[in-house]
Image 1 (cartoon, rainbow, N blue to C red):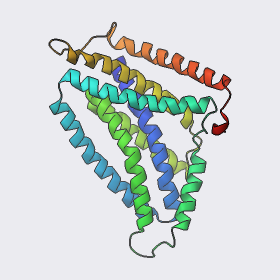
Image 2 (image 1 turned 135 degrees about the vertical axis):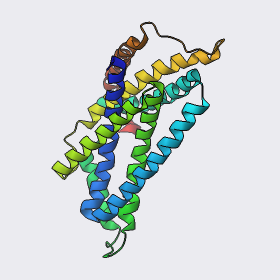
Image 3 (image 1 turned 60 degrees about the vertical axis):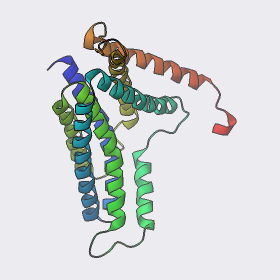
Image 4 (image 1 turned 30 degrees about the vertical axis):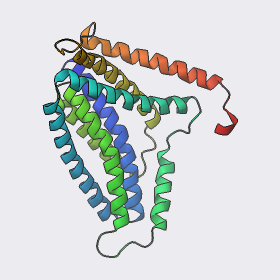
Length: 257
């Protein structure tokens, strides 16, 4: 496997791992509090719909757009997506935003489940079904986006799918063994790392795709080829550390306290 292939595998695994941790917390809360059966049905329905969305969106993007346009569109979306993750990571690391806490989220979901009324003795518990479906589908849409964008741009969708599937298996195995929210996983650190990967790959592919605007529409080649990606990761890391240091030193406005 080449360095680019390993980078693709690690990026999709890490990103999907984080999203699956959040989805698993919701399903666990519904299962422990109300109905495991309804929660699992909701989860299965969401997974089936996500598979259909992946197939349709992946085929459409691969068929309708030329290579440089695909790089520009997907790279731009990845960059925007990565910057959103980095923004939250910077705010958390600088003390401007509370750290993500799976235990707290689990408690909130359980409280909402208890307030939803009694669980039907027979049939489907619609509350467990809908909440589990929504949680898995919304978190899964980010997984679908990451798998499609990384896979298509790297011309290796199977590796992206393997990375995502491996993340799902690992999260489910940990959840089955722990039987509690996966708060022991350093999710805030993982989100920071994933944000760096998304922003770096997004920058790399967006710049390549800007070749669509020149004569012939050929992609722009980076100096060093794929070797520019680690340099971009370091550059984004340094930039985010600068922002974190600045925000830590600045006083928090009274309205934000």
